[in-house]
Length: 119
Image (cartoon, rainbow, N blue to C red; front, side, top):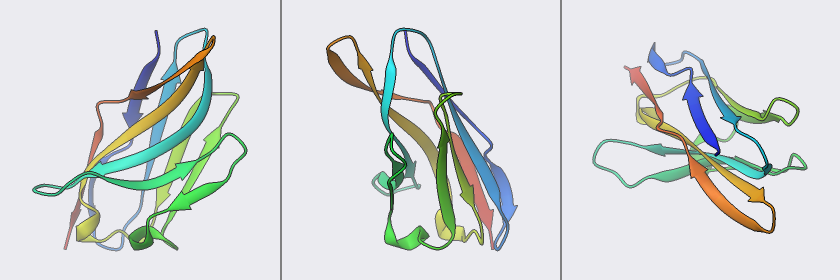
């Protein structure tokens, strides 16, 4: 059983910073890709950043230069450092983890953590 838990959200003023964490627990799996998604009120969910096993990264244009994604493979944990936050960064941030279990792969999601940026 794979469990994904996010933490680190909160309320911050515009220009501030937050660091989100995504911890993956369980046994018998290997993590492939990890990614952060966000869901803003009244909008579709969007991919914010992604990191592969080898450390290659992707960022959506709106967060480039402000967000930094990283992962600790030994601890099965992913992070995103979010600097110079803007009100439009407000939303529920969720972690998606692609895991390999024996011969098949599956995606696992956490419940999300709320990020609110006030102007």
